Length: 100
View 1 (cartoon, rainbow, N blue to C red):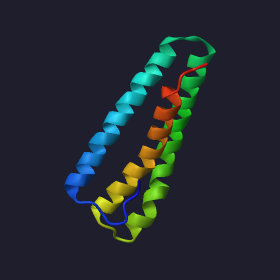
View 2 (cartoon, helix red, strand yellow):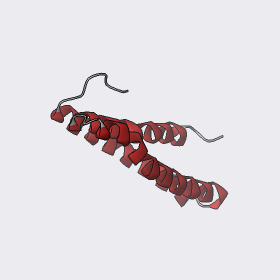
View 3 (cartoon, rainbow, N blue to C red):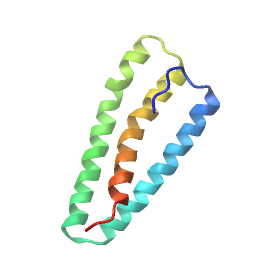
View 4 (cartoon, rainbow, N blue to C red):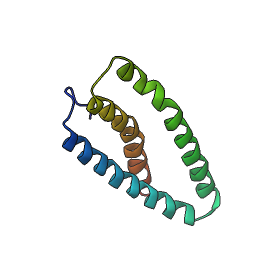
């Protein structure tokens, strides 16, 4: 969810905390999948590495328009959280589904 107005510092802190909890859940889910071994674990490890590189490399380009326009720090923080929140939530949904 993207905010239309910049959040206050307490809201940014709370959103950061929530993203950290969601990321910890994804780490646990991925660990469980990788401990199973086999082709599925190998695919998950490769996917994890690829996602981390992509997310890290694309962050500066996502933040550049805000930072170059002199946006408030809270707006930049919101953009950064939204940048990471989308793939974290997608991974949580994907990894939480029952495998058939």
